[in-house]
Image 1 (cartoon, rainbow, N blue to C red):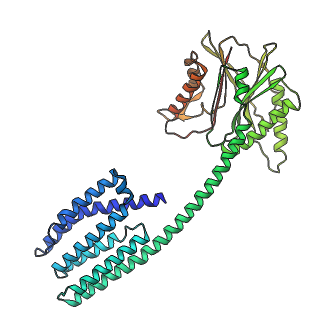
Image 2 (tube, one colour; image 1 turned 30 degrees about the vertical axis):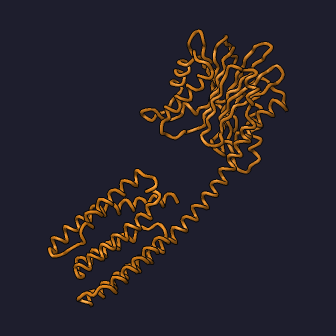
Image 3 (cartoon, rainbow, N blue to C red; image 1 turned 90 degrees about the horizontal axis):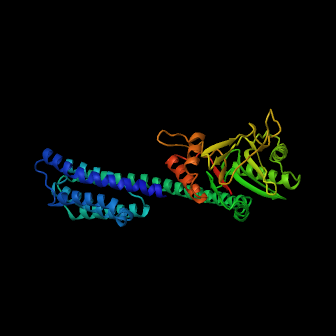
Length: 433
């Protein structure tokens, strides 16, 4: 309904502008066409400035904007009274007759409410009846034709506006139904977000093993296809960042399947080597989706790390997702590449590779999805890309984890600008102390 109100506000403003401009022009035209024509004193001189003032006030004063329909009703009545006096003083001159019909036709368009419209028609009817009864005018036939024409215009206007009000009422009801359905859907998705958040690692577990770390998690929609994951199995800390097929509701549904498969791989099959975990997770994801009659090739890209707290050994395996290690002393980035295959259906599948990662104190490890590097933005609307992402990580390496998170988020939003976020964003940064 707000859109309809805005449309009527635009109509009111247009009518006010026409009132302010056309009244002087009509006055000049009639004066030129009929030099003997007369008009009530000061009406033209006052109405035009009043119209301009109301027009300006509709932009500046909220009360005027809210009550434009009532203000216009009063203004309409004043204009009609003025036109009736013009008719009376000029004895139904045809030029003035036409001006009156033009005014009536124009102002009967601008009514938002059926109640206000009927009120105006009623007032107009009373004014016309009073005018006819109280004034004797020569050329009665001309007068009768004029009166019939005016009431015909009013009747047609009534029929047209009545149909318009019915149509707007139907549109309003349909819009209300759509809003209700949208609210139901949004509420359901929001509840789904609570469920999805429940499967993410709790902050206590993350802070226990990685006290100097951050997680930047920016779903494109209410729910996401990206997720981060962490589990402890004996002396091993396993953690990952994953990007499931799609985003929003479809991506979230895939993420639940993939998250559950990861959990099964370590809890049910007691695996700790990242490559073996990804192999088993792939089997479980394919098994889950193979129950459908349709060929489902959904899955995920993932970076998975395994850290043995006793020996200090650190291993990585990835499905299309690399990891970055920012070397604190050398001020450079070491990239650990992932296998070029996803978790899910793949024609040339091979076992995932375990890659040993050697780090030193104050090196920073980054696990991330492609949401940031694929984001369009900047002055030319291009992708952020990995090169710029690496430069950003190097430039903020001296900052604290909290500041790094804030810096990356600020750069992302500045780069995105007014453009739509294209994908979920998940970035985990860990200072290896």
